[in-house]
Image 1 (cartoon, rainbow, N blue to C red):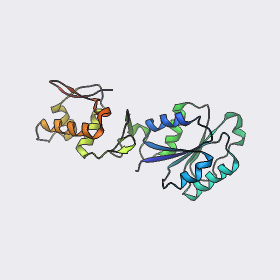
Image 2 (spheres, one colour):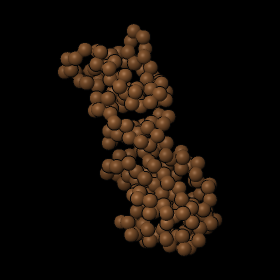
Image 3 (cartoon, rainbow, N blue to C red):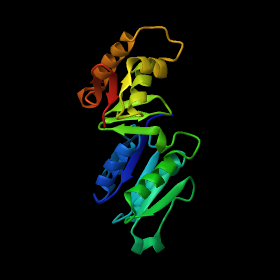
Image 4 (tube, rainbow, N blue to C red):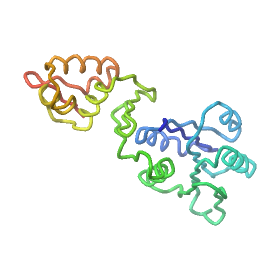
Length: 224
């Protein structure tokens, strides 16, 4: 499964902050575009997995252009944001997996509806996503992103980082980490843990590295 991309088409900026929150909550990149820049956005070379269409103030020709783009590219799932007072004029694309949400819906509902369109059930779900500061870990695909850019980790570096990040605020001895990450059959020394911790810290950068705390005389802890 590849990194998910969302195209936001909106005339107003009312959902920009919501999209920022969504970017941190899910493993996604977001490209916001206005009606006048829509043609440039769809010709940018990006493949989009979801189109979020904020209908407020949009002219019919923009809605038609979005419909054509969605249908011409394999019926990209579309989430329409509609003002409650205008639900009677709600327009959804005729084909594909589509949904709508009112503009007054909660952040949690917005996140869930986007997630259901991005992950229709057979792929990773939001529970597979761990976000800490500028880092996102996709537990289903074994991918780590810093500021939306992939980090090149070995399997053991990834396993160590993901184990610590999913078991925060608890110190683990080097011996325990060897057993839990490398496996009970591993015969190497505890220095292996220190080497991998050092490599992980260097690859994820200082912001995330500051969460990986050395506990003197014990081992390591992932601080939230």
